[in-house]
Image (cartoon, rainbow, N blue to C red; front, top):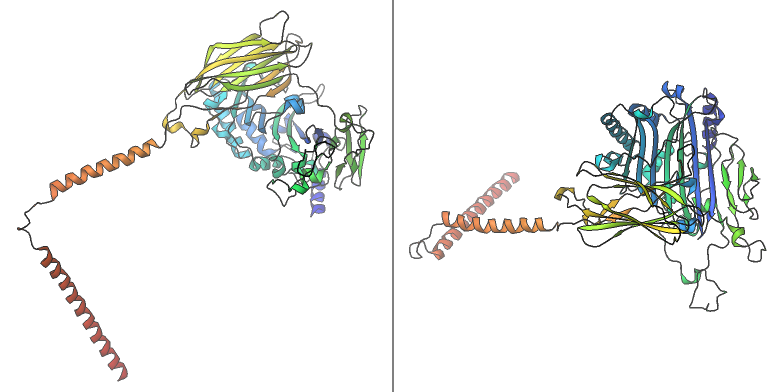
Length: 606
């Protein structure tokens, strides 16, 4: 079956007209991280010329998505499905400099070509409803209360030479409560030329992906105009996930994690207090060992025949001193930097990679020899609620600059639900750990207040953090009381508040600042004043009981006739007469039945 599929893909690749080898490429980058974790980054990229796109000759570009973009007038699209929290303290800087990361839930922003805001809103509704059906997500719930128009945070990634910026409308929507699951992964894979049946996409499994500590699926569509070449429409699909190595090695017949028995615990016997009844756990960071089969539950199938052969499908970022075992037919090529290596795979063959454990007596064994030290991020950010009570509250964001000599300038954006009413005059930025001359921390503020049940609150703050210092950004807000029908079934759980978007800017170039790093904070859970939903039922029961008692008493008074005891019939005689009449009728019926039965028997015998 696998050979037949390979043959079909090869014929499809040969029959494609106008499809160059560089139109599609895919790559998997594996990077071990501290605390026994592994970062796996899947990247798939294909393009199509704009002339072929307008002529509906899509080739390797997914037709289902292309038709949606054409119908909705979308010039550039960015879609994110994310779960979990990136541990910047342990894992360091984010992959792709945070450009492919999204907040918890679903994020969508796009540039639409329209002549007015009303036309842009109509195309936005068309786009969200179409993408909702394509990706099996609740994107159709991105209405006006969950949509904002960022002013400073996002910039187009593609080239738009034929469209003026006045006709380009940027809209941003987020669903922080959306649960990302396998039904979102399946449409994602169907957009690929090999549909997840071959190449690095064959390693993707929903059980492993959604068991990760952190995962993000990204889709980016943008026009690219190379110098001296024809403009193309490029689609880039990315999946990043952080897997726990020990958890991923769990056998497939044991899907539910259970604590191992005492005799199977891995203890650090070098500790002085180690004994038969005391176990100090082994540091799993030291000497990580794993294979593709253990991590993803299966080995990689043959390479996709449609991919660019000049791009190695698998790369591994480990120190040069570490040994790697490969399957037959794979060739290893180490990069000159000594920090990564890539593997070329023969067409039609599978691929397996094994990273063995370093022995304890290995002289090369050290922290630097086992994994590459993660890069320090440009900024650390934490966000949380402050205050108490059900009427008012506050938000505090802690921004820390780890650099000892470089200041960080960024744009902080929040898209808040309409029932969180911000007191803009309470916004404050205070600094700790900086003793030099202090400049204003907040450079610019853009605030668009919410409209009840119609528009969300939009807050964008352009600010900076001096070197080796920490800035606390705080503000107060008031909580609104919702209508009875606006509460969800799990109202006491709270309402999800979308993550804040932080866009770090680089120094000015020709008077323009460009984003060099993106990051998201964690989402929040806002508790609103919640009524006692059992009271309506109590009121209904009490009211029904009162009405029944009142109606019954009134009915008895109006209908019942009261007479003296000696005026009515005797109760005893009446009961006897009724019972006697019933018995007589019953006996008469039994007698007739017996007579009919005897007559029938006699006739039968004769």
